[in-house]
Image (cartoon, rainbow, N blue to C red; front, side, top):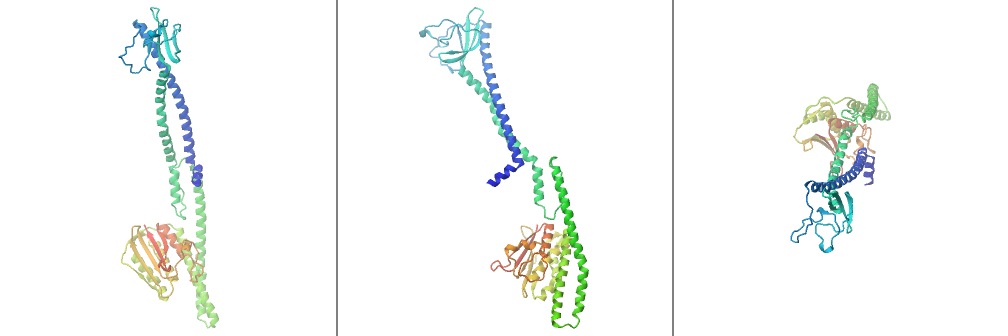
Length: 447
């Protein structure tokens, strides 16, 4: 939880959304308070105008204001909201109070709008002198007026309360939309392989981010040049080593025809094995440099069974020398769209590794099938297998398991992984015999 909170606090999108939301809330609160006060005052002024208009109506129409004897059978629907109109005259006896009058209202009130307290109840009263000389008072309770004005002001503010969450959601959506080019860029970079050093496309990137993208592209260009120089150096060095190694092999072969004592002949055999291993290393270095340096060739439809036959024809003498039973199981023959050279190198390295590490009299099975994930190629052997903890490291160049005296360079699986990445395939290593944890099953899945 703490880690996610720290990540959110460092997020530019989160901080921008937070501060914009706080600013919107602050402005909305200030606007709401101002609108409430303004609407409240306007409602009060409107009600004051109503009192003035009623008095003006009585004055223009010369209406007679008489005492209203409240009939007990007539129900007042809302006694609190009624407007009282009465003549200003001397107080009457308590027994003769009428329902429409304000008892205790001072008779000496000046003309105009004013607030008067009658029997501890505040009233808003407009006093006007008529043409006949009579003075009238038009009044309404202050509490009722305030309640009406407050309800009117709350109706005005209610729209702000509804719009604020909508506005906050809209701001969050727009900010996320604006950051979507960066999200797509990060996703595209995260899906790249380690050998993909192409420049980042700046199309659709905000102007403020373009200098950052340009800096990353310059860095990628420098890294690509550096990697290319290293690969060319490895390829050139491997190429230059082929001639002297061939010469050494010929000299060793000639020396083997001479009469030598047994100790010297044993040393010559060791030298020949070392030369063979070195030549194999040089060839694999050239292969690795070539597939890393060049772009993938044009893909074509290839028969897996045909590729199996071509590879077995070349490696069968090596398997027969160790009395290994090697063959293809299953008759399914799907077609894979891939460059022919890449697919042959991939499968050949897997089969050659299996032959090298399978003991004499062992067994190697090649198979292919079509599954829900794609076309699945498997090579199983009865060798010692690879411990689960080492199954990721064996794909590193020159990495070899400790305690293994089999002649090899440690580049075979690295070449396999490089070609698989180019073809979009996945490589998985498992035990061929899960119960005894022996043997190795290599599964290559082509989508």
